[in-house]
Image (cartoon, rainbow, N blue to C red):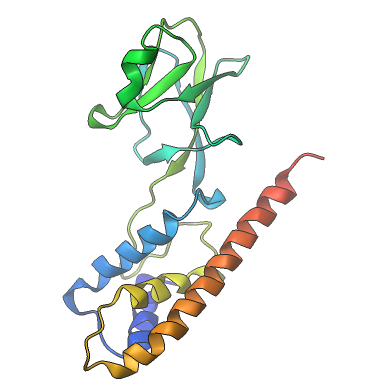
Length: 200
């Protein structure tokens, strides 16, 4: 679906227009859906940089990818030595301990603690930040078309309803139910992809 199609669908749901803030509202809804979990279609790997005490974040970086224990992580070099993410506020406690890194967003850097003893490429799995949806563009590749109406349902849920908009008010529960149905299907699809990719 293009942005224009998503907008038209959303306006049908509320039986009104979103006005001059239509694409702002759409992208707020889009970002909220993407932020719900680390969707597999948002996972990328960056292996473009050599290991040093600090490296530049990818231009589309959003967050690190959690491992099975829930820790942001990356790997370095041919042995794939694993490094774990710490909160930048804890950097003093780790400054002499190797094997960890933190994200310095203010300077667009990923900083390693301790002395730089490894060599080779930094292999970073991360969640990327896709471009906004515009009138003629679509959600990021990988966001399946069958699930894209969820953005319109989220827009409808975010739309403020006044006392005069009884029709929209009556539809709110239905829209929220459909949002939840699509969201649950997205989770199931994401889990199935992980299951199919698991080495047996």
